[in-house]
Amino acid sequence: MARSAAHGEDSPYFAGWRAYDEDPYHPVTNPSGVIQMGLAENQVSFDLLEEYLREHQECGAGFRQNAVFQDYHGFRSFRMAMASFMEQISGGKARFDPERIVLTAGATAANELLMFILANPGDAILVPTPYYPGFDRDLRWRTGVNIVPVRCDSSTGFQVTAGALQAAYEDAAAAGRRVRGVLITNPSNPLGTTIERAVLEDILDFVARNSIHLISDEIYSGSVFALPDLVSVAELVEERAERGDHGIAGRVHVVYSLSKDLGIPGFRVGVVYSYNDAVVAAARRMSSFTLVSSQTQRMLAAMLADTAFAARYIRTNRDRLRERHDHVVAGLARAGVGCMRSNAGLFVWMDMRELLDEATVDGELRLWHRVMTESKLNVSPGSSCHCSEPGWFRVCFANISLEMLDVALRRMNCFMETWNQTRQQLDI
Image (tube, rainbow, N blue to C red; front, side):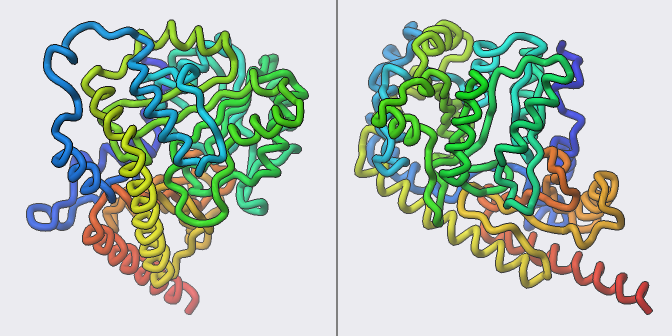
């Protein structure tokens, strides 16, 4: 299993990371190095967290309190703080019960844990494309579960349709695979868009009709910076319950993390939130393999329980992400490169279909290689996200400084000038 290709480490997504690691950009010591735009990390609001911790040095308690054994349920104070933070992110439109929160070491562990609980080796999970390249590892590698792509395209803004879900379900059945559920990311990684309410309703109806499960990965829910607002599946579960429809709740599971909205992936904090008692119980037992450290829980419990700080952080972080998003979209537009309209996340979905020498995955990877070698920009090709249309690329903008982002935009402008000159010469 450790050598299985299901890990996905040979994907261009990870190859770009290796290229950066071998030749990282530095404005003084390596100004021609690779700029990392393939890492969805949020560093735009670190100063807010640092300021809070400087002013509240009591966060985290003492050595002995953190050194002793902790119950694998996690501290109730932290689960309460996480529930409060998730409710604040939803604008109070969804409620979260701390007793249904299961803590994990990041969203990677949360998603894998749900695969172990909901599916057996050889079963299938439906995932709309394009999707986060790491799912090939997270969902499949150790679990033996198969990902069946749900093909989405730009004609619908890559929003999933009921017809596409049914087609994927039938493909899985024809291959002899039992479908156990649908996994969505809302907001989407790599698109940076929120899923429309009507689409979510269709997905819930599909799940109920086929007696399967829905996992909604909402780790970017606090990073929605423009309309339309996020509709969490938790809202729809509550709305249906108020109408007397309680049947769907036990089939819905939400994954959350502090890695993106708070920008602290190194702290390894994830959440499984389920309305199904049996799933909560099983997840809690399994969480002993993926605990969050006592020190991390105590520190973040104090921070997130400060609702005034949390509200200010959410508001300021969203404003900064919007400014950074608008800056990169405008810079790419000046270079002659468009992006799909987005309203969330730490990236844009860049459209370079016009630059392909042929509309194939191979054509896309040749273009990606040129961008990497000529411009020294690591962007993620859409094929690594299983996109059905060659020529789209995910470009991250929140993991680097504004000054470095401007260097990247100048490099992209030079790349486009060279490409336009070459095209003009060929047309003569």
